[in-house]
View (cartoon, rainbow, N blue to C red):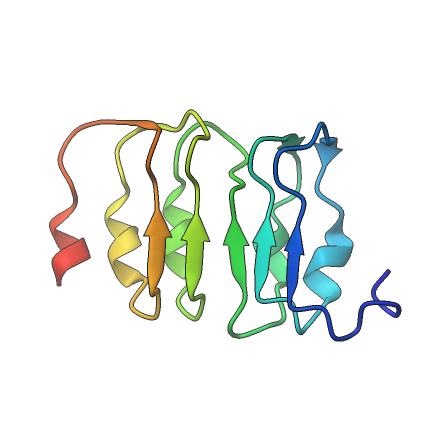
Length: 121
């Protein structure tokens, strides 16, 4: 797939019935900027681990039902959509590290507690 889609920038797999692990091949597509995976039953290895595009976005996927502090490491990403993923708990303060983000959507979740002050810093 990587060789076939060597110029792929957007991959939309939203609202399907995919399950199992997210293939690590997504992390090898260096041109990929946006990956839509909402409304599936995906789990497994975190594709951000070896993400090669400096402008990429991991959208609509979290391996658990909370937002991990490691999302603060997505410093060069432009877009993060985690809407309608049944996320709970608090936003980690590390979300304030996402200075390059131009779009963050956390709507239709079950987040609670205070909005971290680091977001406005």
